[in-house]
Length: 121
Image (tube, helix red, strand yellow):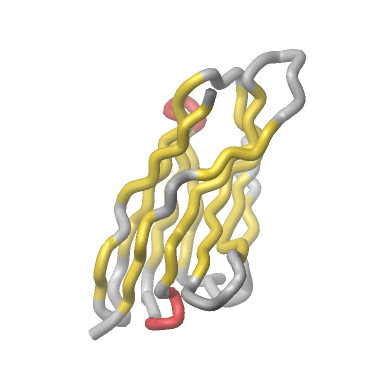
């Protein structure tokens, strides 16, 4: 089994910054892409940013230039640095990882439990 544990959410004023972390643990052979998604009340879950094992990243248009995704492959950890936060960024942020649990097994998507980010004055 694989667990993803997020941390770093909280309440921040508009224009402020937060850094989210997500550590994967358990039966991990390798991890392909890792990413962050978010879901605001009454809305569908949406992709925020994703990063490949080699470090190639992609972002939602709404966060380009403000958010930066990075990862530490040795620690099976992905980060999301969020700057110039806006009230529209308020949501529950979920970590996602595409994990191989053995060399012969297909990969499987795992999700964290989510961490609340609230941007408000």
